[in-house]
Length: 431
Ligand SMILES: NC(=O)C1=CN([C@@H]2O[C@H](COP(=O)(O)OP(=O)(O)OC[C@H]3O[C@@H](n4cnc5c(N)ncnc54)[C@H](OP(=O)(O)O)[C@@H]3O)[C@@H](O)[C@H]2O)C=CC1
Ligand SMILES: N[C@@H](CC=O)C(=O)O
Ligand code: NA
Image 1 (spheres, rainbow, N blue to C red):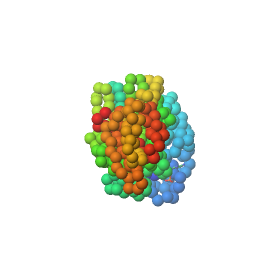
Image 2: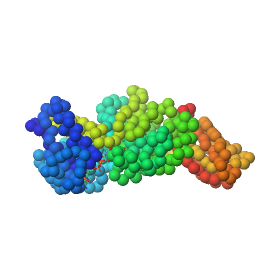
Image 3: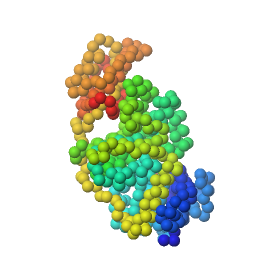
Image 4: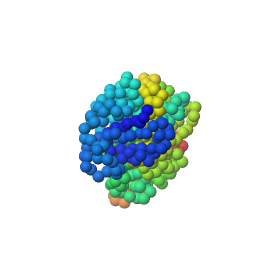
């Protein structure tokens, strides 16, 4: 091959990083693949915009066909975002026998299986390492590094924006809105950050991770999702007081043939390896039956880290081109999907509630828990400044989700309970 030509869809935060990595690492790329890599065209919305990277204006186009139908382009790199329009472009690229590298988790979480099958039919590669945990090679870790093992647990901090917000709120006492706008300026947050803070971005990544890790087609709708928008300063302070750290955790757990996948703000015991992952950093904890505990850590968002994953995927495609083995790397899920019922999902829970400050209230709350098979690991009561009310904060031992939901509903029915202020899943500590 004289050279490899690449067409890029999108030249924003990640696209600019891709151009920089290709330019700055040209020698290393040449050494790995034996020929130069050339960027032939880049699709953008606005040609005359000021960009983070200097590019010849003749490279830019607003016409997707300049990339998708150019017979000289071997690899299409998709870093423009959005779902339906982009899906159409990638189908077209694959049908034109172009290999695809994408950073788009929104797209892969919904249309991944369809696109992978179109890629295979056309003997093309479709790689998407950057779509989960930015620069961390976690998909490769699961697909290749742990290919021989049976994975039973994947727990991840897979959204940089929310980790940045929770870290700055807990450690620097800063406000939610202030930290969110800094995450937007730094390029971690999505153009519309609702999916970041609402947990959907993490859910998409957990759908991709659990599909690969458990070899089972997990759809986005199978992931129970809750974001960080309701997390209060009081909750962060109580977490600290109890020896826990609040993190937005994606949790995928397999027991036998059944799995649960959820994303929710979680109190992690301070000794848990994920509790010290701060700022925009991501980490994925993977437990395999043979290997035991592993953890993959690194920058989960940002221009150059994400671009590194994109360009490494391009190297994978180019190596396959040299060997003539493109289109053989996706693995069809081995197991039918089986999700756990609420009676099979067990965890500890944190609960903060406001109650009447009078004799017998704590005992009626305790009996609601014990009737439903739950007991307390920790409990504390503080008087509230106004009225004759108190705040009760507790952490339960392990209880099924079915029973915990019954407890919440019965507590709501007690006249002495004025409101359930917050509940969170708890990981670690005594079970
Ligand atoms: N930012 C990050 O840290 C990470 C992002 N990702 C994913 O990477 C992808 C890109 O993200 P990011 O770089 O942050 O996004 P940006 O918004 O910074 O960039 C998007 C780029 O795509 C172009 N574009 C968008 N829509 C269209 C369209 N309809 N037609 C033509 N061009 C279009 C824009 O053009 P113009 O410049 O002219 O406006 C821009 O250059 C997303 O899927 C994101 O989820 C994944 C991991 C980390
Ligand atoms: N908005 C995302 C970007 C990477 O996927 C995040 O904050 O992690
Ligand atoms: Na990654």
